[in-house]
Length: 67
Image 1 (cartoon, rainbow, N blue to C red):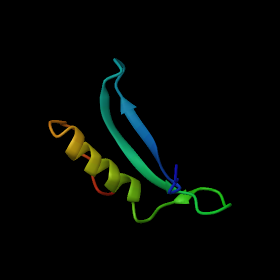
Image 2 (cartoon, rainbow, N blue to C red):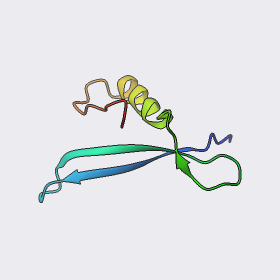
Image 3 (cartoon, rainbow, N blue to C red):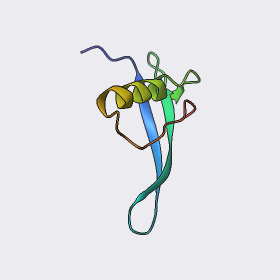
């Protein structure tokens, strides 16, 4: 398996009943031996948008290209 060093950090807001209200996806990358850094190209967010559109086209969740 080849790893591209990309990962999301997801921050979710839910109401007191546990229902989704809003959220934010942060694109993170790790290059080489260094620690993780913010991916300013938002590669993870773009991939999640594409996967959601192709895999769950009826989803009512809107994902902004900025996360």
